[in-house]
Image (cartoon, rainbow, N blue to C red; front, side, top):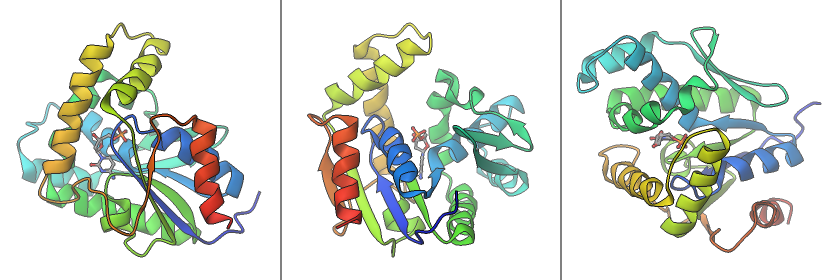
Length: 223
Ligand code: DC
């Protein structure tokens, strides 16, 4: 199918706010390209770990970002490629999740990732991008900006369910602790920090179903 809509939709928010699932639904409904920017930071983290890089060595991480090929391909689902290898599953392990903060806080790495995200969005002329800094940094002039959030308890419950379904033995309490640690590093970094910008439409997803959130977003875009 072609991609008739030439709009940029930015969806930001913390882990477990429902961004990914909702973005996929909205992208499908509007035939928009879906860009999971977190997957890009995860792919670089995986590569740094595999190479045994010192995750505190910012220069090495920037060189890594400059020399890596990261791409997203949509078939029936979104596949993430790192230097030609499909790493869609490998980037979702708890180790990658725990280490991604070292990569995402480096200004030079973010510079490379933002440039890549802009070039993909501009190449296709329209896309829905989901992450932490889409409406503030990547596409500050996006046609539509949304900020999704939910209570930490609800976010932990959702993440816990996903992890248990993928075979991880986790408790809601430990997942909540991880989520709050990630919120803290996402909100406090010096560049590309997660923040709710004034011109983003805020949606509290705590008591909403996934379809309910998707409908809300679609109602703004299709109004
Ligand atoms: O959305 P996610 O949980 O897959 O993202 C993984 C990490 O990547 C997250 O902890 C923060 C970082 N990230 C970022 O810094 N900027 C983005 N635009 C997207 C994700």
